[in-house]
Length: 234
Image (cartoon, rainbow, N blue to C red; front, side, top):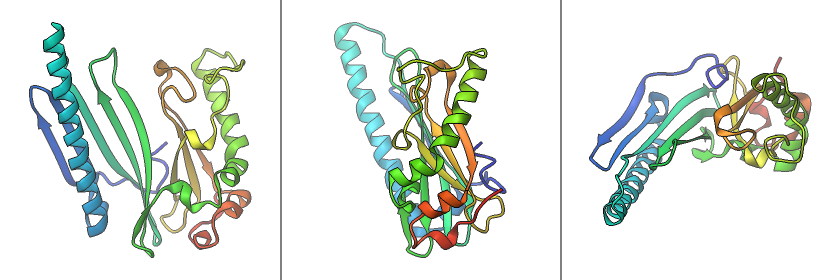
């Protein structure tokens, strides 16, 4: 889905870091489009340094604890990758994926969204371009929930979700990653919604990803300052 959000997906990396010690493995990368924006590149480099430092600190503490307790130590791992969703005249839209392993039965994946507002020269959460979480929820919630339940049923052998547990109910917008995309790199005309593992289903089912067109209702939910950068999709 994330590759379908824009007309093309950049694969050239402006910068990447890879490191391996006896305590941890660490990788971090972002695309050339982001690297060409000095302020955004500075933020990404700072994020990379902060994430590596926390990984090193936590891994060292875990190794010391394992030694103290007489348990074998399992090497930690952190991977974070940013990719281009779309690059329009107003926004550079990025998706982020993170994976961390801290010695358990399996690692923990997660997702992020980011916008670079070229006019204001600042970073934005994709949700911040909408009037409110409630407005975004009202505009995309019903369509997202219908698509989610259909995909849940497919992954569960035809069994439709039922019950009051979180793996049967439809998550709210606040629990989802929002990505903004474009079919023509002109204006934003589609929105991606990602439910990471454990948000809409168990770990084994993986993430749930739904892409929806921008509708008139969703366009009305966009803050007036950003509305000209959006268009109704097909």
